[in-house]
Amino acid sequence: MTTRVAGVCVMLVMAGGRLEAQQVSGVVVEAGSRRPLSFVEVEVLDGKKQLARAISDQQGHFAVPINRNGIFQVRATRIGYQPFTSGDIAVAADEDVRTELL
Image (tube, rainbow, N blue to C red; front, side, top):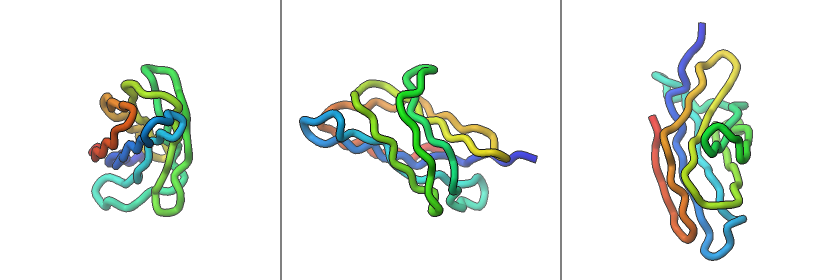
């Protein structure tokens, strides 16, 4: 039986002037219980191309550094759970974007 990952709470953080400081960060939670999920692979995608990835920690937190701005998607996968892919997330230089995806 597989359980759907409820969503990925994502916070996009951009540091002024230096694109290599950008990152996608947040927490992965389970549907229903809203329990944080550890060891989830979190990928930042540009279409179907993976730009970067990270693994969530014991509290479900993750941080994925990205080296450019653009429009991306976030995909979360873990054995025993259905994959979750976000809608488009716009990342611009010198901007803090916070969004919760459920």
